[in-house]
Picture 1 (spheres, protein in one colour):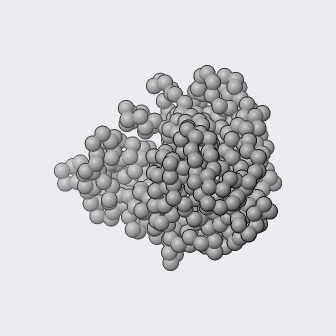
Picture 2: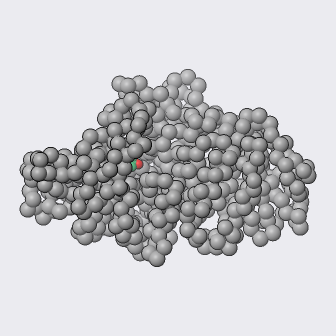
Picture 3: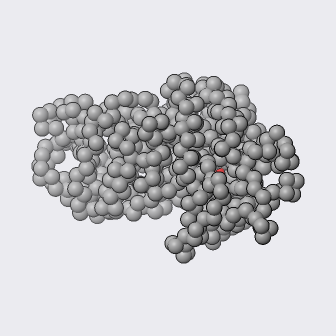
Length: 540
Ligand code: NOJ
């Protein structure tokens, strides 16, 4: 990868993108659920932190059986969140602070309550008869194929009115749209235009890899690695997931995006790193940013991280822009996995790797998984497939703004509980200029300040002795990043001259680096300028 590779520079290449599950961010009316007005009241915080764009989980009208990913009207705001007027105010207020807004686009499925499904399910002769995936019963009388729902049980549900089955990749109440139908494609393009015309800066496409299913409804084979996995993973979903024709749908969505200037299309792509490259597209562009969770999934250890970073960077096309996520509403909190102290190292890694960094609300304070008692579980997955430790509520618990019982999130009863006892909170960390939050803020600022960190080439170094290391290079400017992935001191051996720019501990003076070795404290990472010809007065 060379520095030249990163010459074009749209906003989303510089922005740190912050995912917000609106229901858990800030409540403004005491109903225990976050809302648009609450988010407006926290824009100052986003600005202070240096966030360049917000991605909102679905805010559309929804019965909310699946965190709003079950939409009953794509072109209205759920009353629990506010109104279209409030949405317009939010967008204006964010833009006034230079913050972009991307929305979740859920093209794969609607709620059963959506007017399209109500009509489609009413009769095989209805005008929208072919808008969902309908099929006759198998000869034996059962479901048309063995396809499973990701949320447990068969993926097929019987509809008496049509005397046919419909397919649902997720909940029974989330029927899959038929993306082979041009009318569906047009309807979804209209939905996108509705929001793009209002000024939203792009979309995160939900479940983008499953838009098309096998036309012959061929049965999925058993998964040879099913042992110990939840029942939905008993099969290898070759005929339902990541079908070649799905890419045409993503290309179609991208064409709509590209008919507006300066918009971003990112997307959830399931599967392994080796598939991620396909989602960028070659001849016809697909996603700008297929979301990459390699840092979350990797073992937290220098050699494994080095390998995961390398595998990902090698898997994406030459001109593709990388992207890194450290959390999300479906993903277990990384602070619970690596511990609070290593969160500092992760923050530095995220903000110094080449590509767009994404963080999920609360990651910046080192939020951990919040224990949820069985009687408070709201995640439909956990209710339907319990006992595998895969409940998503612990990451969806309300934001903790202060140390009060409801965390400054609500004056009412929060829809999901917050943790008891000591837990990181925003107010406390804002007061401490060496907190994790202060570090995230400083790193976002550093990235904004130095083109080398944003656009520079990436040159890996050999990671050794638990220290993950690489350089970023732009012209004569070289930056070294050395990260101690353990809690014990480590020596990083190198030859050259340099000057410290920032330590994860936020306490190192900008002193010259000793030649031959840097002593890294436990949980410490360092960014340094290394530039022989310009040592001391680095070329920015
Ligand atoms: C992907 C979303 O990220 C997840 O939260 C949701 O459950 C499924 N899509 C189904 O809508």
